[in-house]
Length: 485
Ligand code: SF4
Ligand code: SF4
Image (tube, rainbow, N blue to C red; front, side, top):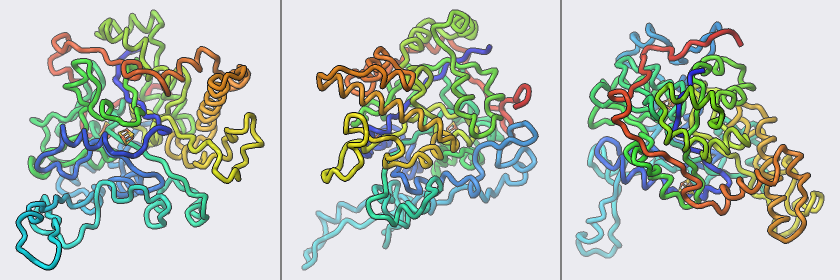
């Protein structure tokens, strides 16, 4: 057992209201500068939709992430030979039109325009050329709230039944906030020929050393989540840094701090690094379970000893024990990785949404059939299980169904309690929960304070190895699986 610590974020999608406050707070702090105008380290996508950059989930087009070949994990982009061949031209990289031409508005014209019969307007000015733009054809949230649109929603690869868009009243919508996942098996890191990308030993945050980066941009192509952005001004690649200057002092990330819906949770997970390679070569349907199995119980003495032997401090062990992330990801198995089939082992997790669970005004929803007349069976939920399992469990519908059943049971039980009815514990037991679990989860989802949702231990960087670097192999494979499937 090789026990490591990772700082992790969980998103509760039932609570995201798509306000984009997270994206703006991130941009104001980190990417409000020349060359990074188009870079949104945090963005929020409307699903079904094509996302940002356009169609980022399409690995047939972008060749991001890893594939299993002869029992080994290989970058879809290719190994050393392919890297050398495509040093100066990479056909798989997103282009400017896949993002958008960044622009600002000429607000001064509103004040300084010459007198005229027409209202003055603030023209769009390209932040790359500085010239006036006649048309704007893209933006960071170009398909925001357009899930009924055949132009965007129909192009979502997760949508099996595209007819749903044409059937009035059937389409659904959810928001998907995204940051870099600070993956355990980061494709960006594996692909960098300059070895500029590294995973910090002390907290697992993946960073790009700006002094080493040569701007080859293999990381941009290799990251299946398209979360590495090339800064055209500095000529270096950049990405989300998990707000490490804040995290190091025990504060949470800017996106978390500003989140209006309080949908985000931050905490520590301990995991067994020696099993990462084995877990990643499992068949698609088993990837979520394999990823869960790596996560270790922080209360286990042997795990604690293993962690201490690897330099994990007591403050981090304490934080791991009270980690809301451990509760959500491992203890109750409610939070799932985004596209585990990309095989980078992402370290952000998502609680899939139930919504809407309440009756429509007309009462036409088949609510009366079910239990207490308010919460429908999961098969009748508006967001299809197949769609959610394409996003969060590599197509394994059983895993998503289990999560939804637990969430439904939790709502049902807490509703009975809050209405002064005698709560039915069987509802919980049927989904392997109990009243204690319900109380803990209710606090995390509904009434818990900031410090319950975010448990971040401060760090003393002087305790760590110089630069705290780990990984950064370049040219291909990061970990080798031990044994077979
Ligand atoms: S999501 Fe994973 S592969 Fe992509 S930049 Fe982040 S760590 Fe690298
Ligand atoms: S601030 Fe929170 S609620 Fe608003 S879009 Fe971002 S994640 Fe969603």
